[in-house]
Length: 452
Length: 147
Image (cartoon, rainbow over all chains, first blue to last red; front, top):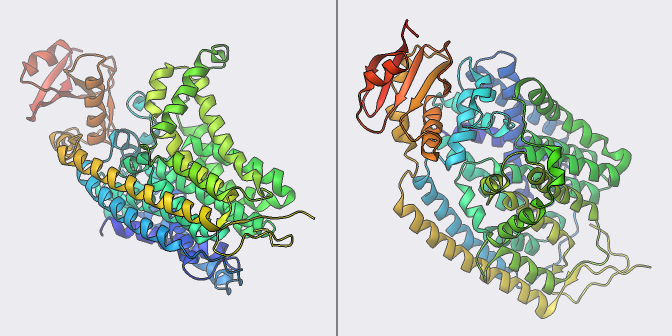
């Protein structure tokens, strides 16, 4: 079996889940596929990986655990789709046309071609990924793909060389694919998975903004992401940061889309599912999931229940892992609160992070500023609650640095390049959510226009 | 009655799309060039394949023991020492490398050297008997009865 086959099985399973949970709310035409195909990847990868871990913990060997996990996730997706996913799509309002959209489409095609070329080149220079890939993520995948020593992934002896306390979704996904192929440690699997995650992230940003706003906003959002140099850098690093962004963006999109449909329960469930998978991918995902849960409870109140229920299974895995298996994490100390001299260093770090996202004049922050200045903000600004999870994530990063028990400069340099990258797709999505859509028709000033 | 404004039109909208598109293309060309330069300099930058090959005989020769000892000859406490241990850990996983030489319960120990040395003598100092010199600086030891 080739490295791509287990990934495609997971992707197919994810598509049935996405199609089922977005049924009746999906758009017509290309935006549907540009949303469903990239969103299917995290749903398929995440669901299969959670089940795989549960089966390993229950005592199954890697191969039967991998086969069962993927088949059960696929069968459940097909059953759900059969029950409700084949419904006809609801007619949607035709998005406003913009005569000059072709400019963005051509740019997107050019950028996409260069990006794919760079991904191919990166695969030859880093066949086993960047340092943290083989020191953390793929190392722990080797344990999860081994007969009888899966819990070595959380062995306290690894502290100092790896991070046995980190969540295991991405390592579990790679391990599951290795278990299918019987070639644990082969670089092609995490390389293909990493590339699939990066490409899915671009397409998801495009499709997500297209479905909640318009095609050109989606294209502009994808272009801003592709002008982020750290995104290029990490696309082939085989780290969990890009998959994490994918889960978080998927969760935020589903929540925003659900809010636009009177807190549609299946979409909220999809959001909860993806947010809890983000929590099982990295600790930052846990912070994001908490922020999104808070935002949804505030905005949706009683309607938030499907979100919470869907988040429960993966949240349970995270909780049990942290309580029973992961070595204790002694990285934070409340005594650091008194050390206010850390605050300027942390702010300087964040400033450097933003500055190093690209090079002027094509720096992504400059592109966002240009977009905001020329397009302007919608009036009134709706769905402001979407900022809460993004702000929570930023605050979580700040708190993690501020309360870090270890040397601050060392921690900051270890995190360099990844922190803002994780948040970038969320920042782009939320900003374009609040910006006006480019349109060829005279400016809309319609008192009764439906809020989307 | 509140007024909603949701679209931007005219020159401002065209300018936004044109500027973002043009600059993103400039960025892509620049980053591609950057990647091309970087990748042409380094094929398999961390040489992980090479590390995996060096330690390939260890699992079978240690009976796939879940935990084996490990030490190397790099400067103690240096980044190089830690990097060597980390890459060896990846190569040997799912065997867990124990770096604490006080662990008496560990039977097999792997020496990772970057230059020819008196491997048997180094082992003896630590109470380890040389089992095999596996080449490329990889030496397998077994805890002797004396330690």
